Image 1: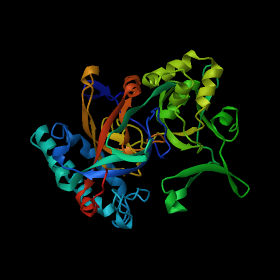
Image 2: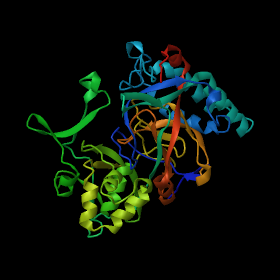
Image 3: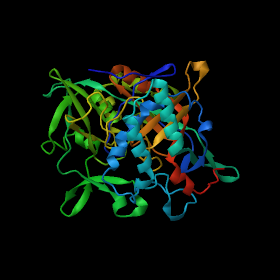
Image 4: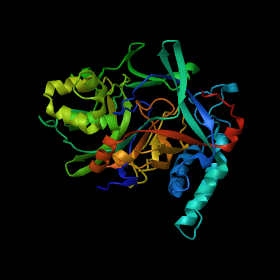
Length: 439
């Protein structure tokens, strides 16, 4: 088994995650006041701290893989029909634009992959020049609302939560045992997923899932009901896992199961449609953990120390339940699993975003200032938006894919930072943008 290691500053970051849908959960806990919208600022490449230090050439093949998904689409099609309209924009203008807005950059990037460069520095310089020619940086801001003694106040902030995720490895069994007692289910045949945006434009990006009862779509069983056997005889079992391991596999959305000497790669294949609840938040509310102590490792330690019943109740506080499929047809075995954009993820260069604000395929400059006192170096890096997740909501919110295996898990579990996101947006789109007032 190969683990990909990405070094970012002092931290080793492993990036790798899978999702076909925007419902993928995360362990992250956002704090603070209510976010009610977004805004943006068009800036210059000179405003991107560290822009000339990153090995941007590494991102070109990652960008091209997402470009390849556009091959059969018309130029006049929206790049993402669910993208949020810009504040103050006429005719529903978005930062995603149309497929045609992206086509020139995609063609130029493919051409770059065929070129021969004198040395790595020349390749990096060419990549940097490519981005500076075809794109303009757009800084995202979350618009917040809070109550004050004088009434409600709205304000914009450029910083948001940035976390990391990985592709875990777990032991599994092909038969039920007292230790491996949690079934990993294939997607049930009766599960129906509905994109509400196809019925009402104002519901774009929202989905529900259920099953038919006569002529009525009924909610699918929740996590607790499934654990009680609601799917027995209705869904095929892929394997059996330890209950806590299955819970974290569902959090990550993909992983590798060590099953009878085989390394079986599995990935997300649907959800029961119930809302995702971060159990870290549940443990904070119950006084079991302090907010500053919450991490994947801390939550796992609590679950392992709890009684079986206590752990089950906490796991089931998250009503969401994820179904899986075997990933035996991936074109690039050395890359990560498939993300929501439909392409395999690249450790250290793929990022999960909220696609309402950041379209799949968008190059995203991540800027995290670091904490010298905590021996955390800054993280300034160009990544490509290729995934999404149920807890990855709002404009300034992202999850970095960091790789595969236990070391990746250690890093991802403790990576919880605040930083800024800059979208490299095709110049054609930027020329059409209104100038919002983010104050």
